[in-house]
Image 1 (cartoon, helix red, strand yellow):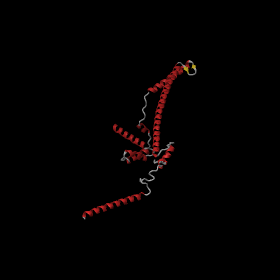
Image 2 (cartoon, rainbow, N blue to C red):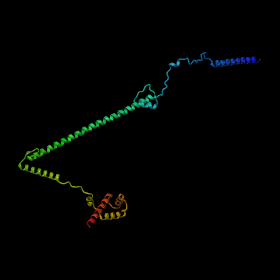
Image 3 (cartoon, one colour):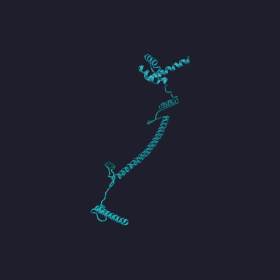
Image 4 (cartoon, rainbow, N blue to C red):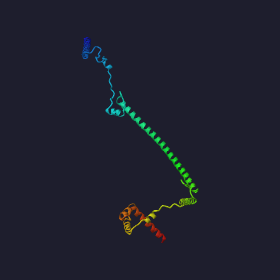
Length: 252
């Protein structure tokens, strides 16, 4: 009895599993709807989209378009990135061309300046050369007793001309051999400076008042108290007084 009961339960279980499979198949068939047996949609088998083209590239922005117009560049069929690369290449090439042009201009400028300098040297040499020749020619003619444009003259006139020429040459030689006079020193200039008694009094009073002030600003304050004298004049005057005072002490 137990054996037959178990067999019946097994058969009942198989029947239930079959019903479940049938139910699943019905649900699947209902979910397919109007699709065909292979499970394909109508759009999957369509070929209309194959002849259509779509441009997924980024379009050129308004700013890049304005730059293309400014630089007079054409970029037909370009996207944004290609237009940017074209503009960058143009700008880089323009900068390199400017650098090359500046180098060429500097090179030509050096050549022209050197040529002009050489011409100036040649012209200066010619002037000095011909000036010396003219001076020698005039001197020779004067020594021979001629006047330029008049030819020979009487003996007295030639003698006077030669005397004047010798005197002029002697003065020129004396001037060249004379020692060069040294320029005046600050003491020479200061001793020529005129200081009135009133100014001396104002100077002594101001010097006594501002004696403790540093030298950098002392004489500016002193000059403000002395009528008609500048800071430099007050400084030189005080320096001269100190020198004379030391000289007097040395003599004693």
